[in-house]
Length: 113
Image (cartoon, rainbow, N blue to C red; front, side, top):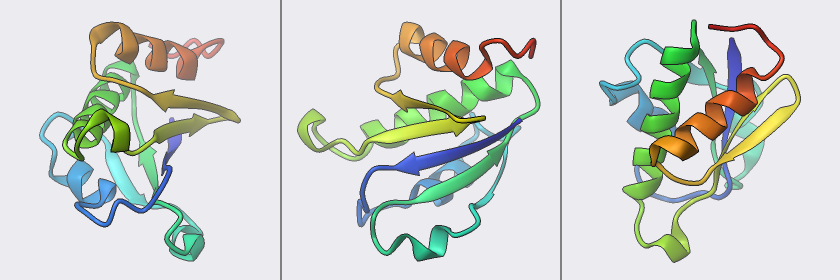
């Protein structure tokens, strides 16, 4: 499944794409800059991800949550959302319930396993 990952703002620190490509948790996921991402003009980062199953999707969400947490205090933690087929979900934390909520929302009515 193809996903677009959006950061809400330019963090000026370790870019999300670079983090995800180095992250061992998300090693099953293929990443690339999203088409048109160069034109975002500092409004954040857009990454395209290709996952093959729900397990790799869950791993991706965990890696995104870790990237968010690495960027400082709660008050300035970057907003990250994942979009698939018109559904856009914000990744708000790394606890298992949050990971499950994001994965469930992205695969709802899909039959993906």
